[in-house]
View 1 (cartoon, rainbow, N blue to C red):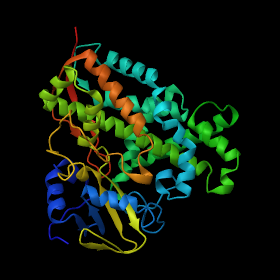
View 2: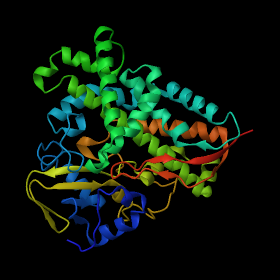
View 3: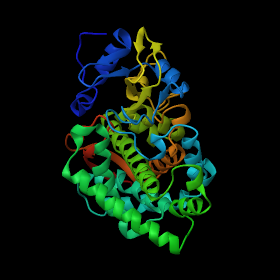
Length: 397
């Protein structure tokens, strides 16, 4: 254990250049005891992968200590479960997120990106790349997948922004977040009742069909679980994609050489993976030890929580050359921004497609970008979000 004090649940830590602290942790104290919150921080790539492979030793569903978020009760969503319940629930919706299924959404995504850019560039003015571009796109797509009507897109975006902050832990609880949860629960309940009467080709209808076919008899599954999974897909699908798009644009504005490479035809698939690695939209996930386990020279005791620090792992020099710099041509790029193993991000294929199509169209239509002011950060120990970021976008002639 080390004398240096780092509060891994302090949102300000994550906006005040945490990468120097990550370097110190990986070098000097890769398994770090956070005495403030009484949990372990795991900072090295290999240690995180080792833990993720040991899914019976490190679990998400501990009802006493907590689940995938620190010092919070395990919830009823897919991500708060372990096998076999986790696999049963995940299989219900996984076909919606296969690369083949996701690719069928290409026209919808392209149309949405064009509409957003039309609105953002209709006048010569500063553009908030978060509120006008990065945030609406994934909220629209997740809304479609879940079965929500188009009129609720703005509300879905707001609910996502206000509820994702709660994942940072009890210190982030606020009235806006509580109200957003209440409103979203009501909207999900209304959608559930609607799809009971008129099912269609969406995820809510899939859940209802599974419930009718007896899933409730095999595992704990009903409206409460459906609402929890709705919120998981909204927050996981909307906020991660939003964060990668917004922060990637910010980094491109700061690194004009990388922007020029993209404008001159650099490999966009490689660029997307580098954006995801460099940003790492989710700082961390938590697990609870079911038995004593030695790793990195420390012993994690049964019942203790650990924080898997993905944003540190993706800067680990044992796996990435010059990881502190954005390199859109990086290859290979085996980042773990979407997690690893059983709980690998369900929506990774959709996120990759949204990000790729966004930049494909953005690069075609925008000649140059200029940062007009420092971005407004969103301090949080869970998601690496931006509240707003003003840019000048010069259109291609």
